[in-house]
Image 1: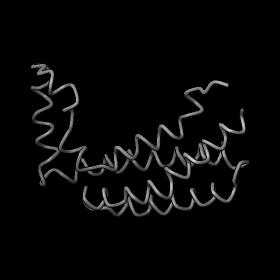
Image 2: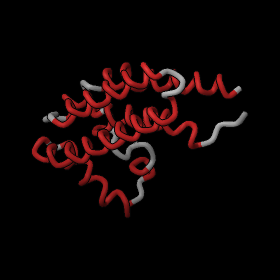
Image 3: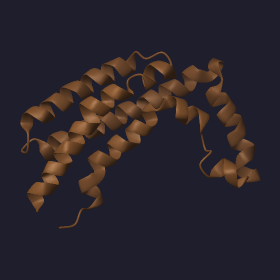
Image 4: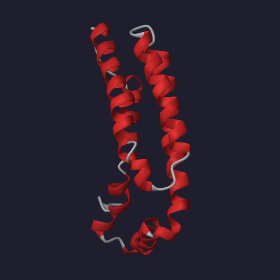
Length: 144
């Protein structure tokens, strides 16, 4: 039995969303992985001011709204894929994940800063990400 990208999409979205919830690291390490280390003068010219703007308190609201939208969109996709793929495995778990996801989205809508957003990471991890991963593992077992 082989897994496809489609099979692992819910888990992949959970991992990507967890990265987005780590707002402190996101802001501090923006493009430090390769682009800034490589010292590409063409990109560095644009990225350094963007990183400064991202970390400036006066501009936080501008970036925060886009970041919230990306996380909410990911959660919506996770909930949709989870309901479609795993309801036959464990309906109660799926129902709980969907309810927790909706609750988390409501909380995210009213977040005022990156610190408040980052504080929601443990909720996402424990109530959505880990249960989705468990359902994924169960689905893989059933396919064997």
